[in-house]
Amino acid sequence: MNNADLQKRKESAIARGQGNMAPVYVDRALNAEIWDVEGKRHIDFGAGIAVVNTGHNHPKVKAAVQAQLERFTHTCVMVSPYESAVALAEKLNAAVPGNTPKKSIFVTTGAEAVENCVKIARAYTGRPGVIAFNGGFHGRTNMTMGLTGKVNPYKIGFGPFPSDIYHIPYPNEYLGITEEQALADLKMRFTCDIEPSRVAAIIIEPVQGEGGFYQASANFLQTLRKLCDEHGILLIMDEIQSGFARTGTMFCHEQAGIEADLMTAAKGIAGGFPISAVVGKADIMDAPVPGGLGGTYGGSPVGCAAGLAVFDVIEEEQLCARATQVGAHFVEHLKGLQAEYPHIIGEVRNTGAMIAVEFVHDGDVNKPYPELAKKLSAKAAENGLVLLSCGIRGNVIRFLPALTIETDIIDEGMAIFKRCFTELTQA
Image (tube, rainbow, N blue to C red; front, side, top):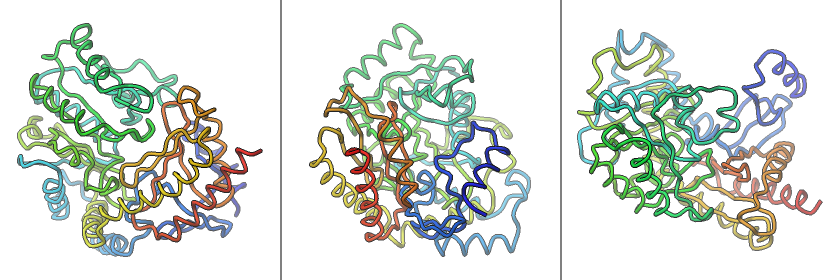
């Protein structure tokens, strides 16, 4: 069995829409390392898109899952519930910023969590409208595609999308979009498209994921909070990619000192096991009638067991602090490279261990260099390094390492990155 043969089988058996970044098929993985079916070792700077924040096969998560498998794998939490779901909800309710009493629900995917946020917001407010941001990514279902602010590849050929969704610019200093411009556009939407009294919610990622790892400032999030309070609009924080210690705090919007009305959680919640959640203010969460929320696999007992173990690992191994250290170490490498290639590396940025490097031509922010990001991801894969690209212009490489990654593995992976980068830019 080899990678090339498996890629041929995959292309025959799986729809092309569910593509894969590189023809590298995993046999086993441990912490920040992967071995493919040919026995080749790869350093993982993607963590399954910020899913295995605690590393591949963390022993504590693995033990919790094995113990759960000995007991039962599924009963449906809405039919015959179990203590682990209650305990994980209690953990989430306590971890989310703010003093207002919280409640949670469990579903299966990030997109499902976002969909349920919209349902809950509409049930609570009695309003239809939702405002989202350009460059935001919220999922691939019909509703979440409508919220997602990036066409290629997420929306091509899939319309029409739901009505009463409106997009505004995401503030982005590097791209010249000021907070004042974003807020002015929001007020224009209120003037031209939908009155505030018909808006149920505003949804925002505190750090855009697919959009390019741009961060909303504390001031901007605080201003949104005040504006939502003024108009009776709910503020939804999409923490699917930024949550679970990834940015240096348990959830990123904690850094802005605000309390969301609703928050989505997924990816890093359970060390790779499929479970997601909506957490929010208790009176808002209780707005839908019994049976109005849920799903057959929501709150999987295996996922709940893994999620409880992840909470323990984050606390015991101080992964919030570790995320800050990891991010700083990556930035040190990348800033050094930027000093050598300022005409290509336009910006290096990070929020904890959400790290990004943006490529441009001639040092010009208005001349994105997506070809380099694409070629670099492919060349890195050939050289044993997993890299992910992103960005509304396709010109960003993002680094999402396990928060448990060893420093010498970071250095080894960055040496591969620099070598690939240099070979491509000097060719």
